[in-house]
Length: 341
Image (tube, rainbow, N blue to C red; front, side, top):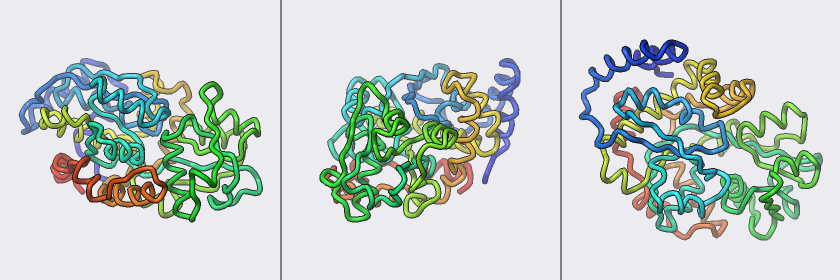
């Protein structure tokens, strides 16, 4: 784990007063060689998952980078799939979002204004199932709950199904529910399996409901690829390269803080209203391997999921085309040299 001097100072000042924070960040910003950002406002997507913890503790780091106005936009995009993401980008309501790589690839395949900029962390999804279901292959003919088709759980489990020879469109009975959350259906015994993201796995384990048959943070091959990746509005990235680099740097430093100062990050998530449960926040920070963003090549993640999703009939583009059309690693490469890795 690499943590630079500025991140240690910021971790220590999470609990400090506002004047102290600004005195430190003002001095640190003066040391930064980059030109000022083209805009001082950044809009970040805010979804229900708490695995995207770096988004929720990045505001002070963004202010250090020169962004005076950090806006969180309630989108619900992680549950609504590509249709909602299309609305987000088209209306320019959001400049950056952190999302599972699969739905991002669906967006790029459909020509939406999405540019993947960096991999942030490895797996946070866990697949829970009833007794008698021991593997993904056992889901053939079973009911699986998802909030909507093309939502991250649906896309991820479709990729998992293709890897074991299932046709996710025909072999799995998808139960979608707009009124009752899939986790509630699973808890009540009305569906056979449920793929959740934090804080849902933490809740099911606390209630001793179901059993985990796949943990994407631990089980291969899923643990060898990024789960959540940072994406930007393509037009914003094109017009604001300095701001984009500063956002990438701030987000990766926030990811490091999830490792170097998890207790403070968990408290910050609660204090900021991003989650009401400190225990679930703390457990998520312990469960999700935020310390591995330096280990992998984000293009490998795109290739891997692109092939799975092509097999599932969910995208048409080749991995090479998706990378050419929807990825920009310039900023990540520069930031990696600065932060180490």
